[in-house]
Image (cartoon, one colour):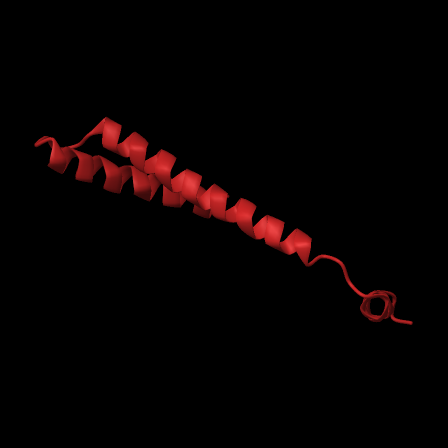
Length: 75
């Protein structure tokens, strides 16, 4: 969670300065907000995509399940 917040903070800084450069001011709050929203939507979208990919492959064969059960219980 800390890394996610650090990435959003960096996106806010970069977006603020880029937006400020476009509008000929030093820092743009609008650019910072757009940077944070865009970055968080991208990261959360990737998380949702990979979560659905993992759920599609979550089914294990009975043989593999038995191997993992033996590894966990030590029997």
